[in-house]
Length: 227
Image 1 (cartoon, helix red, strand yellow):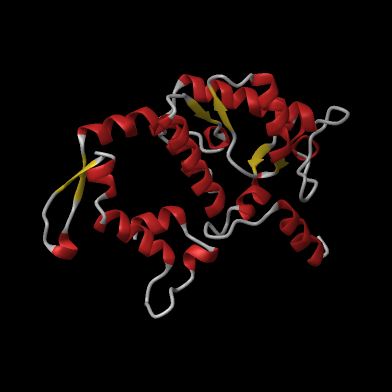
Image 2: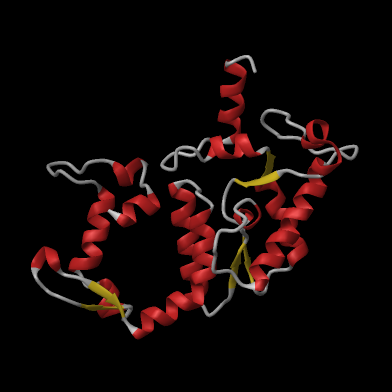
């Protein structure tokens, strides 16, 4: 249940299997346990009490090391409340990077909209995320103003000087940097997947965690209400 609440499977993975009462996501998780993938093949867990449905898994020393090496990136990825497909793809990207001996950084806009929330992030993630955010704001600023791409809200117009240059940056999909990737090239590619949104529109995009709205869907919703 905890994994389901984190990933919120949709589409094929959420469909009930023929002749069964559960879906493909449940089967995937169950197979990981029954085939002992995490403990026998990857050495990431060790079995605890083996009592059928009461079987428990605990992180092994290898598992703790692996988690520690990727904790910041995983937390940043999962906290951004992306869609299921994007989240699964992001986790797979982190795993591939680790398996090939590369280092990866996940950029996290939530660092700047969840002030005070304790997060396990490195200085590198914070500084690079801020740099990407600043570049996105610069990119979308026109004639000294930046407005919400969905509703057109202008913080400076409403709040004056204190609102100048303020906006939240919506990640349409995870933004990664591998250690060998040139940062300027990454920014150029990432800007296509970053959208400036006001706080209200940003929250509405992520209102349903199991099915986040696209910016286009949000704009269509606003237009349908003559707003």
